[in-house]
Image (cartoon, rainbow, N blue to C red; front, side, top):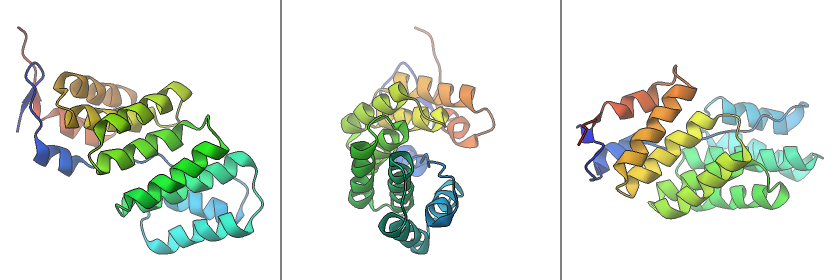
Length: 185
């Protein structure tokens, strides 16, 4: 299915198949929090890793950044299993602890994408980009999904392009761009 940038119209099947991208937070120092971080970064989605994060939050002493990061990582693991309300609670906690952690906002935005609340998603993703994130290509990819969900095809196209520009090796945004055809008017 091709998308023409100048013409709006959501390809719901393409958007649903795309899936959002999650941005985990590196937690250093050993212990359960670091293992939680590695699971989130490594793409795990088994509930046992979520439990590992919970154990870390309940038993380990962490500075504010690592505690917020562990909430983000647990939220990422929940997000992968499409537990959107539970994931959002973790991202909310991360924002309360460390309101300048961009990943918490971008991932919270991904929960809104999962529930098709695209306007809320854009607010959070834009805030995350303002604050800065370690993997901005994922934020632009998610923002493209939100724009597409709101039938703003032109903005979606440009955000997929930006994601490719930032991370040319990542195939997901390139695959999404194959659905578009650009015409000049």
